[in-house]
Amino acid sequence: MASLRAALLDGGIIDLTDPGESEDFGVSWTDRRALREFGIREPTEPWAWAGANTVAEGPTWGGCIEVIDQIALANRMPDVTDLDGAILLLETSEELPNTDTVKRWVRALGERGVLDAVAGVLVARPPVSELNSAVPLANERARLRAVQRDTIIEQVARYNSGSVICVGVPFGHTRPQWIVPHGNTIRLDGIARKVSADYS
Image (cartoon, rainbow, N blue to C red; front, side):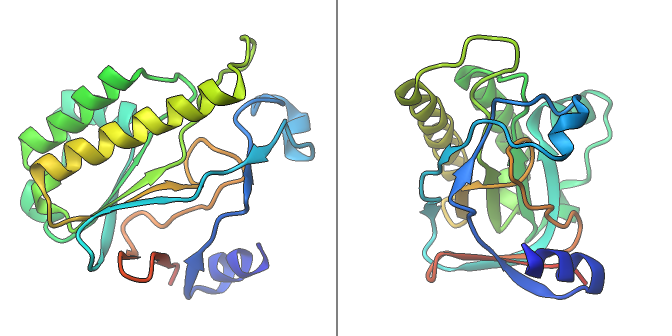
């Protein structure tokens, strides 16, 4: 994480890596202990790559799918032409939207022309359990992540088979997490299977 701190403080281009473990249950982010204590962590699955076997590089736009939905309802979406060649960031929150809901949201981005415009899509590792509720068993947590992954890949490919897709990167509502640049450049190398971000 030292290279991340250096990039955030000094700027620069760095490769994003997987810490190899993640948590989506444990100490609530609203609890001050979360600043110094880990929750329950488990090994992460390898990132999934799909779409074109090429390199996509561009400025980022996007974020939490639930928030993008509200942006669209408020008629504050960027013009599709402004997203031409961009890298779309997608993540889901601790509200745990089900797969059908995620499918509808991503399909709506396709119908709006967003998916066709972007060069690549970077999807965060989703949380699959919520605080103050029973934690699903490990195989169920893995299944929930897999069906969301497959649904997003299917919808993106339906509207833009030439895009590069990477799913599972630790940003958004997972912990530990990368802080990815919004509006700055991210490079998705579908050949070398590498993600790099410009923090300049």
